[in-house]
Length: 395
Image 1 (cartoon, helix red, strand yellow):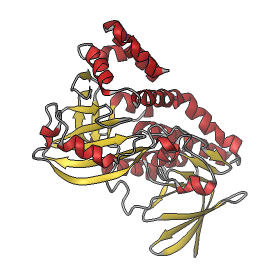
Image 2 (cartoon, rainbow, N blue to C red):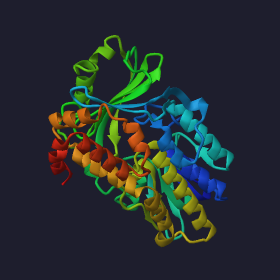
Image 3 (cartoon, rainbow, N blue to C red):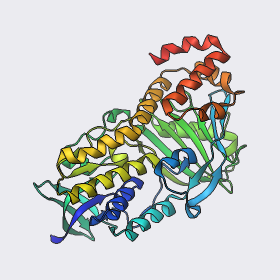
């Protein structure tokens, strides 16, 4: 085994959260090594490749034209029978390879050293430093760091080796199937489609994200259901009466199967010299993971500067993250727990009551996810008082 250099901080995983953590830590003056198992950062299919400007604003970063492949005018939320809520909130589909490469570039410019084709295979926890063992070109290589940040995805090896239960509800992991398709002819090529219902994708959603030139990402995300997500994906694409017509001439270019931590909720994220961030921590959503990464990297660098990598000092990351985002995740978790209980007929009635309402305007009046959700429920009840019986799903 070859012993390599020591670093202040090693980030494992070039996810958006990992890239942001590396960037912020380097920017603050720490020596940072970023390792990724892939040969090229951003390569391979990704389940997350669409976001909205309102969400991305939380990062404080400007959207870059070079990674935007299609602009969206907003989103349609559709019930099983086709009732539709229109939300006009500009968004964009991204080329994840270009997106990840761009932010890897700014991390490198700040001083981060990046190594690809480097797979972490063991972590030896020490008192003052940790030894991270990797495999590179069939050779074992050891690195030392005062802080190791795990940004290595939903099956985080770093969290496992550190003995951290980084997700509070791992059983809530969504099963996901997403395909990159061409020849997709949707009726609204500038709107993201979000289909809900027990018969469509129980527990969460099936989606169509247009990417221009008849290309789209098409996906099914399923929670707490014994049937494979692939069955719901095939049913959505080939049999769903609302959308199967869009795919008559379509071809699948690439297919991804995996998990999405949307409802897992962050758990234990730090111990002495160890931090967990992004999908590894149940911090779902590209912009949310990026903001978490920024907080993580900044706290890590300050800990290095203070020569204090204790759990109590690193816990500032958790406290700051909770202040910024915990309410958003709690609201999302509760919404999904409600959604998995509502039968299709009631989803139809709820969406139907709102389809002629300016939902965009109502949402713009509130800043938090909780208040947005509460306002929509109140609006639906004003439109149709009979919907009051749906309150049983909230209890």
